[in-house]
Length: 221
Image (spheres, one colour):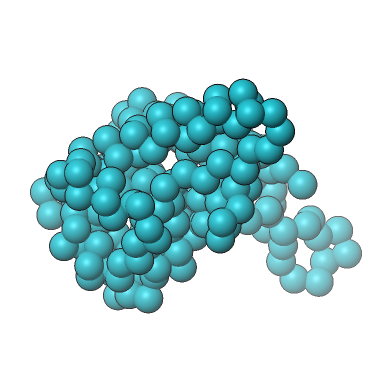
């Protein structure tokens, strides 16, 4: 069931009153705290919700930070594509388009395109929890059919890979040739290695560290 990011908050669920109201839905509660949770593959419905939430939060306060928690396999699982890379690029472009500083935090995993979104947070505001798993990988084509269709999709995969390489290189400071080589195979890195790579800025042990970072101007930590 889809939840609208601009859904009005319901009254809290309290006590045993016969007329008590149902509890508020979790997406609305998180949105109230300016938290966006990406906890699924980047399929169209997920992309639509994430973009709507980001645009809504900008309209609410264009200067207050937004926190994006990421636990996603991106657009593929194993060697099977499950979504189009354009879904991730749409979120990425929206993150760059809106004004609020964006904190990205990996909790669990950020694979492929999800790792790209993790790297796209405001510099100085990108993080992961200690046991998160971050994976760089190239786009996968699952096209079958006529040779011309396969050729067209192969070209699209190549274009998407080049765009990913460009974004990762810009966000991490790594040379494009190195990023491209790393993406040729599954490239697993720990949070500490991700800091060295330039993909994130720090590893969080507690929420207090995030709260401290959020209180400071973006990029000063």
